[in-house]
Image (cartoon, rainbow over all chains, first blue to last red; front, side, top):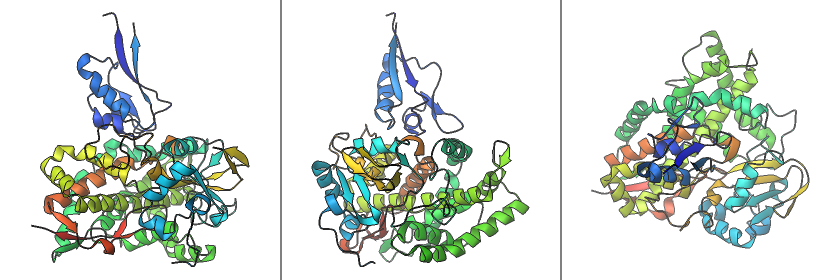
Length: 70
Length: 402
């Protein structure tokens, strides 16, 4: 495919609303302040894409991005 | 409660303490959203109320034009001298950048999901004790005898005052959030015993530090210096005020909903895995907390001629009902999958206790419906709602069904 799709949290936008790591605990966790953190390098597969989109759609701060890079 | 004239037009003369707003604000907000969408009032010395998600979001995130120096709308205004007074300095909710971030980072770790989740067994045990104490003659006051008693017990536990009389905590909250139309001197007088109580507790903790939030605050440092006692005191008051009526309101409103929607109640009883999603919809639909800001300087904003020291009543509950952002916004959908609600605010002042609030709400509902899987409102007209910026049922008689 040559394409790599990743889920990313913009740390400047994240305010620790806590939705991502509740919805997708295998994909996100939290730091000592309670802000969201992506587990690993965030690479998504067709199997995990929907979950990432669901987390994105529930972030009140619009801090979650799904980025494609070739 | 007061002799204030009733509101005839909420667009030009709104008052969030008006009985119409207190009893059922949603139709008012729907109307304002279509007509204004920013309402104004000369009451409280001048205030604005954006009814849309976009308006609420813009102001919540704009710390250049708005200050959080005071977050409870009332007739007076904070001055430099009275900052330490009852309503005053409660960092970080009443702080602006750059101090805000320092004060906030200090206490965030005490409310992180890891720390808070460790309280779950204690909260569950507490809920069951309360349920054991209820002698249900067929009718339970789910607000006064259940929802009301959970948050203060949890906060008491965190601050480290086990076994203390809970009335002092509850009174502290009510002086601040519900006596907004009393004269300033009277409010200070009402608050005095609460202040004395906390000062004594702080002294006790200074002499004899323990493993609790009070000692955590007393040990915390900014730039290598311990926090001023005023800062510790202010933050303790904040934790009480922000942590008690709010969660009480959320638990109460959720039970009020379930009492009138037997299908939703049955789904939660039969599909316990639905609870986390349902919690978010309860929070969206019945968000208890409306915040406030003060306008920093005269300006035109959202098309409105705002004046320095005008209030902004920041209606997160109204934003949560905006159809531009939420599909079928005026419908409660228990399994709503996409739910970007703003019950805990937006931007740098996001509720620090949100993880704790969710936990309390979840456990309180789980234990209640486990004990009472079927119930209904005893009498619709007996339900009363809190007046002010924190919304929730105060009196909630539920008839337990078999």
